[in-house]
Length: 282
Ligand code: NI
Picture 1 (cartoon, rainbow, N blue to C red):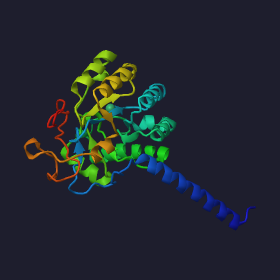
Picture 2: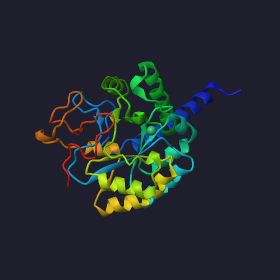
Picture 3: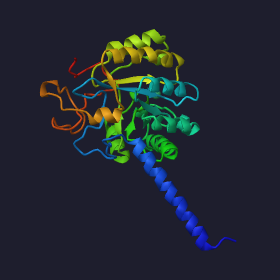
Picture 4: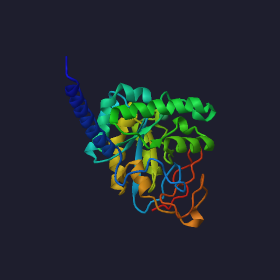
């Protein structure tokens, strides 16, 4: 039998290495400057784009990870030196924690996209809470840190839901202003041309890493956007770069959003508005 002192020492050692892992994973998950777990009461809680001074954009990929396509996409992103944001479905995240770990190791951000991809707007709070918590748990199990972003499936979410989810989970709600409708599988060249045509500084671009055509479209899409001078950052990095919008462009806001708030949100109804609404174009 093991002595209790030995067991205690071993437990301490295990706990120590666990905390080291936790610290590493947490710092990997939160880019500098770190996004606060609970945004201040005056910070916007919902974004479809961000008002920024510079050619910064955020590419987002939903519904994965896919065992085959997401690693292919990670290779393409690495070749282009691009950091993206993955809104993962919990059912897929729990099946492929190693893909989430690789993504974070390579500088990408992971957000919550629900457990089973239902439309939140007509669901009970208890069911929404369960969808969010299970995926939060799956991401934490894979990465050691919690996500700070939520993208509701289909962009389906009420203002009341945005508020309680932000209060309870600390999530910012991320919609989009560029939608190439890649889930309709229009073909890679159409996906590329729609994204390149609609993207503005501060854009949040929606796409899906579960469709082969989307992955095929990305090398040319990235080439063309980079040729136009756009620089890719994660969604949390884009929000951290946000600057206040001039009053005349403040088309509306959700919740308490004073003009002086850092990271001014553009209005974000569901579904998302047409590209660049409320943004200064280059
Ligand atoms: Ni989705």
